[in-house]
Length: 279
Image 1: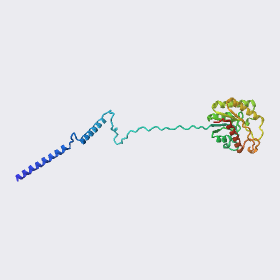
Image 2 (image 1 turned 120 degrees about the vertical axis):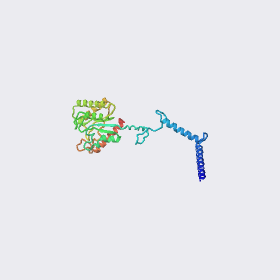
Image 3 (image 1 turned 135 degrees about the horizontal axis):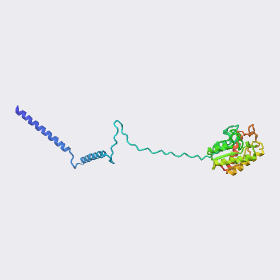
Image 4 (image 1 turned 45 degrees about the vertical axis):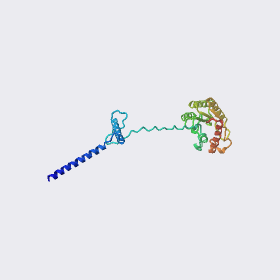
């Protein structure tokens, strides 16, 4: 019995020694040799990784690639470049003439509606930007329904920054002192030129209806013609397009009907076009 136990102990020792030997050989064969290409690449990769990590952890290193530490519990947000600024194309500048109309009830569509006034019709025919400042009863000297003369409309035309101004003599000034009226006409035209030095100013003769015009109307027109020449404005004698045609006048025989205004607009538009004063 003792010999068998001893033999068994010796056998166990031999087995254990053999296992340890095999384990040692396996470990040795797992170590890469210096000439093994795969092993060399693995070593180089490992060295590169270690070097990068070492550099990334160096304060002030220019080659650091490690992300900035984030606050615990928050997601890391990468730095984003600023968006390119939005470029807005400049607004197109309108080339349409800005026209202001200075006048009386013949110009504001009295009795038929402002949308049928002859300045509106002429403006639509020429694609103008119109501001119709005309007021019933107004003249160069005669005070209109708003308590003012043409002088106040001059100020409004300047506020509108008009590039073209159409101003008409008026039968409302009939009966005024001739000298005083001539002075007021010149003063208003001078003020208009001073307020709008670069504007085209078109001065029109006074309108009358279907009957013969009174003699003083000719003097009123001459006053405006002289004032226009003195201020660099263009004077246009429109004649009397509705003379002899009572059907184109309203029942007051002072203001044109809508058809009369349309005919008046056509005559004035043709005269302005012929003079080529608006462009």
